Length: 211
Image (tube, rainbow, N blue to C red; front, top):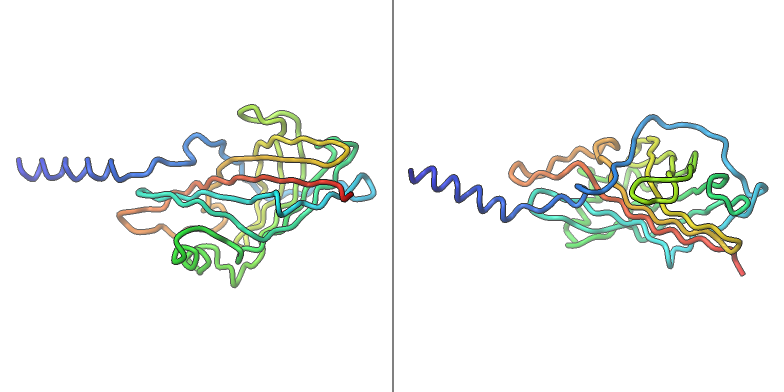
């Protein structure tokens, strides 16, 4: 009887300590083999640099007992905007993986190691869109597909985004989840505190014509 009570108490404590999965209600990006597609060029429209001061590349990862918010401080890219029409346009982004940030500091060090991002071997991550279609999940204005290269793996990913284009530039916002194991990030975590596979990605892209 005592052992049963102890087991129930242990389960109750574990349930209280468990962290809700931040990716649970997020759209899961569709992942597949990398694709090639005709892309817009600067001669087709206007090349707008992404403004790093107002743009963000953020993520949320979690394990059984906790979650961690972070992102990348250093990235660059551009949107080639054609006729103010997102479906005729494209986006390219380069990310400096060594600019990863989160808290605490020892977690930053661990995430940069070979257990996770291995930034010494893979210092860059890139995204290049291959198509933008109207309409998207959960009220998004568009669905974006492109090739993501991360941790030495290139995959095609598809996710919803809200995109606004005008004569002065283009804004895009997206929130979705990806499976880290699709990109070779397989470190399991502690036996009693496993790391979840799905990671939430949040993108805030602001790109405007130079005055």
